[in-house]
Length: 360
Image (cartoon, rainbow, N blue to C red; front, side):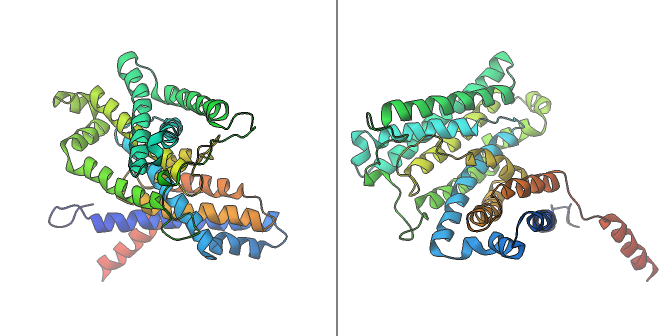
């Protein structure tokens, strides 16, 4: 949509997209309520927990903000590759590799120095970037399908990192599935005492600005978006589409690796453990789709989705409704928002109001 001056009506577009997302969310909640009524002996209490539980204490707010930070980072990683129209699913594997690299630095002598936190973050980004480079290079060089190659690389990374954690980082003969705790210098400081609200949320917000700046204020970002919109035109314009595609996957891998470092260095862990991401990394697909791959919209979507996610988990803990309910709501939001959902009858109402305006 454009204004009378020919400039894009960004406010109108934002209002329309926000209204569409809110409408989809409300419909998803109505369906969730119906399912809760069918499965719970006390449905009103269960639904109340879903809507209000994340705000009931300082501790639950900390859980929510911890999820928001991680969902923001995984949403940014997916947004970067989706902007280049590459459907790489490799963020989860990059998170594991990044978490391992950060853990190796944290458990080394460097982990007990004042530079431990930035060194671990950089190590995580380097590990994630290297792992993100692989599916991009395989596609550019050998024509490998990025969906298949990235999913297989996820599988390899998860299994290898879990094995290294259990067999080499856990204390010998302890039977534990995690490393010893990191030195205090390598663990994020809490922003609010006795909560999970830590430096991770700051890292996520800073990375949001960085990704937005790179995509919309640099020549490389313009090339990436051109390749995503029309790779043939980009090639005619002298842009090396394959190189940009590989760079996009590598950059997304760096963000994924950063998320791995945030996982293991955060207050929730302060160590590396088997299956430490709890499949949260994969939920970034939802965040990127709903945010339309726009970096500045990613934290807002993560805020709303993280609230719903925590509400569902707390509802599962405090009532007789299983927390699998979040999967139902998640699937509904994806279906409604990603399929260009519009309010039924909206076009008919628009035609009616136009006719009335013409008569008057």
